[in-house]
Amino acid sequence: VHANMDLYKWAAKSMPWIGSDLLLDCFELAVELRELDMRASPYDLAAWNCEPIRIETPEGRRIYESEQRRLSEKAVPLRKRLVEMIDRTLAERG
Image (cartoon, rainbow, N blue to C red; front, side, top):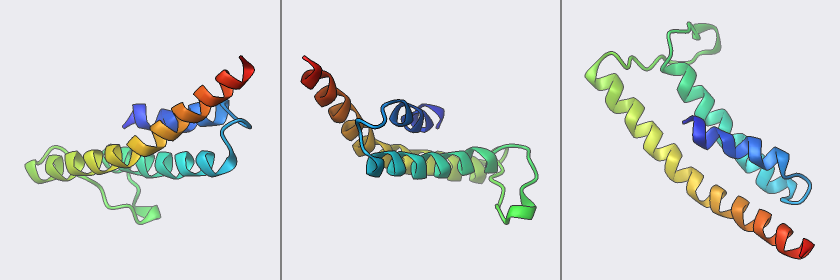
C-alpha cells in the first residue's frame, strides 16, 4: 500500500517534467490507497461514510488482500509511465 502511495510523492518531485496528467493519475491512486489504509485501521471514519475493513476477521483479511491486489495492479502502468518519463528527461539532459 505505502510503496504504491509513494508513486505520487515521486511524481510530485518530478514535476514539471512528467506532466500534470500523470501527476493527477498518481494522486488519485494515492487517495484510493490511503482510503483503504484508513478503512483497515482502528480509526472511526463513520463521519465520512467509510465502511471499516475488519482485518481481525478472515473475511476482513480477504477483502483487504483483494483490494491491495487490485490497487497494486492499478499502480503497475503508472509506475511504468513515471519511470519512462523520468528516464526520458534524464536522457534529454544528456
